[in-house]
Amino acid sequence: MLASIRGTVIQKSDFSVVIECNGFGVEALVSRRAADLCKTGEQAFLYTYLQISDAGIALYGFADETERRLFKLMILTKGVGGKVAVSVLQCLSPADIIAAVESNDPKMLTTVPGIGKKTAERICFELADRIHRKGFVPLAGVAPESGNVANNAGGVLDALESLGFDRVSSLRAYKQVQAEQGELDESAAIMACLRLLQPR
Image 1: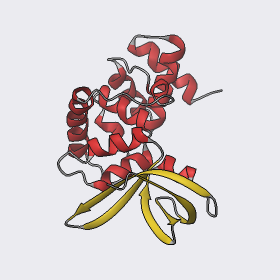
Image 2 (image 1 turned 90 degrees about the horizontal axis):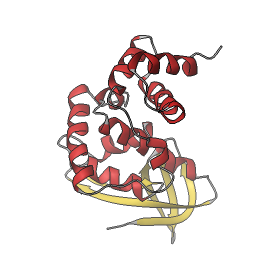
Image 3 (image 1 turned 45 degrees about the vertical axis):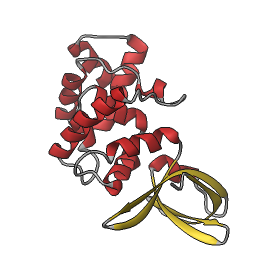
Image 4 (image 1 turned 90 degrees about the vertical axis):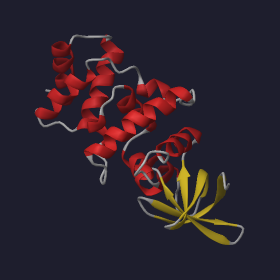
């Protein structure tokens, strides 16, 4: 398997990069964090995964091993191919994905274009099992962001969403509240999140 690539970035878009390596221009579909690492005309190093399927050959690029491992676990889910899995990583960080899975919050995943309710539920259910069976542990720098999502997270996030806040912003506010104030009951957590989302 082509596990990584290093070279000069000769072309870049929001979702793909072309890296010149030994005279060849290699195109990769990339996560958001991987795209942020790539600057046109500069050297870049990406972890990669080469997928060969009936649809053809595609190379995917990631910022670190955590992203690549999450990608490989996601594509084991029925109906989730490489393009869908990398789309998730283009919209959500590994910490957000893990938090959504651990709190069984498929609504977070439906914020990703192309991910419907059933697919999101399937990803949450199957990924939770794989993460625990394979002893998945995020790399340093990712774990603190994910935090521990409390059991009442779903109710808090649903309430914030009903007030017009998007799921990703709501989850980040909830994690910040939890990190700063510890476990709160649902109503107190909602009020604390609102103070972050609607600062005066």
